[in-house]
Each structure stands twice: as C-alpha cells, then as structure tokens.
Length: 451
Ligand SMILES: Cc1cc2nc3c(=O)[nH]c(=O)nc-3n(C[C@H](O)[C@H](O)[C@H](O)COP(=O)(O)O)c2cc1C
Image 1 (cartoon, rainbow, N blue to C red):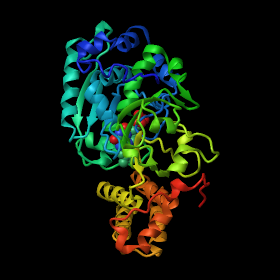
Image 2: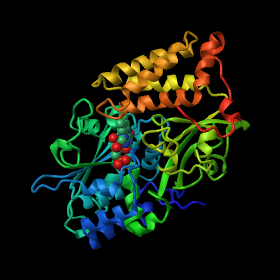
Image 3: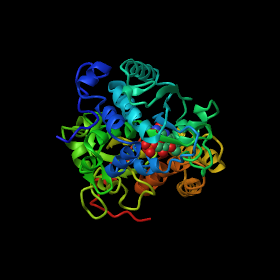
Image 4: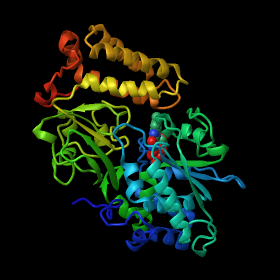
C-alpha cells in the first residue's frame, strides 16, 4: 500500500467535522508552526520538501513563496485556487468535500509563512456544496480559536474568506482569477508583473492550488526532508489523481510519486484495470489540456522503460512542451473510443472557454473546432489534417495565458499519434460519425514516434 498523507483518514466517519479532524491529529501543524517556527522556517521546510504546485504547471512551491515581495506597510495575500474546471480533474473538489479542514489547516500554515493576514479560497461558483462546506469549516476553526485575532495566543491574526468564482475555466488561470476576485471580468493579465509582486489589488500575492496548500500540513508536521523521501527525482511526495474513463474503479486516488503507470491502471489498489474486459487504447494523463498518449507510449517510455507517475517520466519522449502530469486528471480510453470525436469534444470546450483577448486563441480554437467537426462528420478531406496541424501551431506560445497552449496540445498529440484515425474518418465518410478506427496503436510494438 502506498503512503497516504492527505487521504489517510478519508474513511473515518465525521472526518469532515472539526472535532473528528482534530481527534485524528488535525491542526497540529498550526500549533507547531505558530508556536515553534518562524515564517522563514516554514518556507524553508516547504523548499526542502521539493513540493511542486499541484494546479498543473508544477512550479516549486517554496521557490514561488520566496519570490513574494515584502514592501513595508503593504498587505500580502494568499489566494487558494479552487476553481478546478479542467475536464477530467476533480481531486480538489473531493478534498474540500470530505476533508475540508485539511485545506483550512494548510491555509493557516501557508498564510503564516507568507505573512498574510487575509486569505481567500476561490471556488468555482457552480460548486455550491463545496462553498458551503468550506464556509462551515472556517466557522468551526474560528470557534476553536484557530482563526481570527491572536490565534492560539501567538499574536498572529488571520481571516479566511470563501469567494464563489465566475463559473468559467479561464477563472482558474491565476491572473484571471485575481481579476475575478476583484470583481471584474476574468481576463488574464499580461505578465510581468507576476502576482508575487503585484497580485490582488496590486499587492504581493501567492496563488496556490488546493492540493498544494493542503500538502503543507504533512510537510510542517513531519519536516520537508521526510516529505522529499517519497518520490523520485524532482517529483516528491504524494499526488492526488482523479481517475476517470473506461476503468473498473474511477475515483480519486493518492499515489506516491514514482508509481508505474501500468500499476496505477491495472492494480486493484487503484483503477482496477479496464472496465468490461476491454483493451487500453490511450490515456490523457493530466486533464484535458495535456497531450493524449497511445497505449504503447503511456506504459513505456521511448527508451522502453516503465513509464512512471512523475513530472519527468510523463514528459519524456519529446511529445509535450510541459509535462503530461498536469493537474492529475487521468482519463483512460478503451478500444471503443474515437480519438477524433474526443479531440473535437475537447476543442469545442476550449473554443467556448477562450476569453477572447488573444486572436490566435479566440480565432484558432474556432477554426480547429470547425475543421474537427468537418472530419468527424464525414465531410473532411486530407488537406484538413495539415490545416488543423498548422492552426494549432499558430496558437501555441502566442497567447497571454496558457489556455491557448492547452487547446493546441491535445490537437497536436492526436494528429501526431493517431493520424491514421483522422485519415480513416476522411476515407470512410459514411461510417465516420458512428465509427471507431480501433486499436492500430495498441497492436504496434513500441514504435518510437517521430515528426
Ligand atoms: C486556463 C487555465 C485554467 C487553470 N485552472 C486552474 C485551476 O482550476 N486550479 C489551479 O490550481 N490551477 C489552475 N491553473 C493554473 C494556475 O494558473 C496556477 O498556475 C496555479 O493555481 C498555481 O498553483 P500551484 O503553484 O499550487 O499549482 C489554470 C491555468 C490555466 C491557464
């Protein structure tokens, strides 16, 4: 059994309440940090832990914290990103629903480390149950003296507010989130300046993902070095994975970084193998914005070694600019799934969610959707594949925020790994809409993928 740091007590009845969470050792990290550590000590432990942001980009959390500007007389803010609107990702919602105090405890420890006295949890507006749950958890923590003025008699003051979000995927991008939190339309800002210098209301701000913030609790409790012992290379600690698609046991799993992908999919401890005895065709390993990988490439690296659930291993192979670990939304496709239809579906989402500020994203997502619709509905011709490739190339790297990249990468990967499936749709127009090309890639031996 892999170690559990965040979900250890998930099955304890009443763990969503302050009383039971506390009984199980909750809020020890707050006591330890506020009573026996300086703010700098906490930052140091987080640096030592090697924790990388769990919101998608994987930026080292301790390093981000150390960039925070500290001008005299200017407030600093911690903003928790609970927008979680990436298709395939639902682990933050799970954590907030079942162990809300893990997030509150992490918020207190992190706010203390950053010298913030007002912090926000921004949760997507449609997640009303989670908004209510977090508000209740704040009330409980406050009643017990863990929030408000002079926490535990240490002289440290902190208020946490929950802010319902604008109900848009773009509001998860950190600067769009800050705009939205300030009451404006959620349009991403041009960076620099980065939020660490000029964030909420122009003040130094750290934006961190729900899971990143909750992970500071075991880091403070056990020490950063202990946390860093779990995992491999620059992928330390545990990671929450939202597993969905054609697997026997969809759900949220906490894995130790470094777990082989094959074990994650096929062992009973995690996904329990493919549903209904079907065969594996492809995986999107980190939420809809990361490239899709065919079965032969998700189980083994280009060198033929087992692929691991780490930032590094999931980036090996040159098929992706960033890392396919993303936000940990692990979507599994069986042999019956159509890659073209799936790509069309994602692209429709990105076209709808583009904020419209940047022409390459606003226009490009629309054009990609049109071309994919044409191919999927049996009206495509061969030149459309190259046109689609060119359009996605024009989007990547040419926008203010990475939503453009997020829209381009799935299309690029689908063409690169499943071009024959696109061709099949064009050559078989009458079968196209219902059709499924099948398992060509699964049958292949490990074929290195080249341009
Ligand atoms: C379009 C878009 C949507 C995003 N949505 C989220 C989100 O819902 N939750 C999140 O934590 N990060 C999201 N991010 C990443 C954030 O911009 C930011 O990197 C993250 O909140 C930083 O936290 P971390 O360092 O703890 O990962 C999104 C980024 C983009 C471009």
